[in-house]
Image (cartoon, rainbow, N blue to C red; front, top):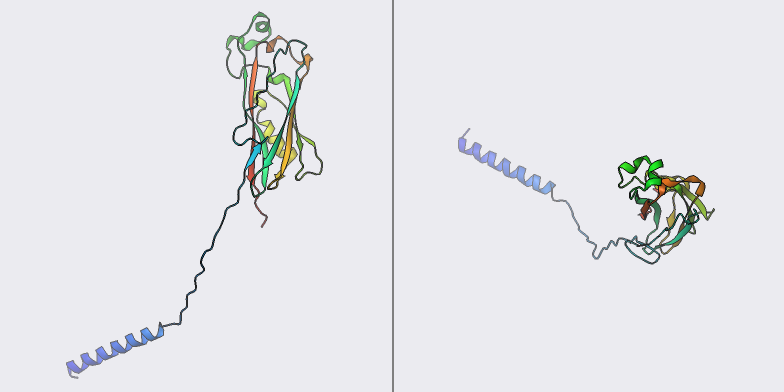
Length: 215
């Protein structure tokens, strides 16, 4: 066969194949586009007694030795000012019992007086607390005692664990509110000279987490 005719034949075949390929890939298409689509996130925010951020409460217990009895309480109103519901938790933070040195009567009964410092005092261990939840939002048995503990440093974690166990899921709907009360007291027969000059400080923290819908 003539080489020129062979080359021409291959070129025609290649062009034909290219034409077929282009024809088979020319499918019908159409494009539509939506405009002005908007996703807006909801808000979740709580305030405590109408205060946002850190709430400073000055709780003072003084002159415990006058009659040997300490008692009192505090009620907080938790408001959900956001647009979505949230689950509430309460925990005790920064519980510190200070020894503040020892006089002679305390030194006779308190073995830690040789090393005074943070977390050595015994005052919190003789102050019993009860946390009461007035669950206006979800609970059928309000008010209910959800935490019973002392203010000893070692007991700080029991507030959150008891809240989760006894209160369960505490939901505040958007725009809703509920109250949490903490009462404290002591038994004069439960302590002696070991608490002389001791001091106690603590923070109460409220957290709210967005409710996730069930799938």
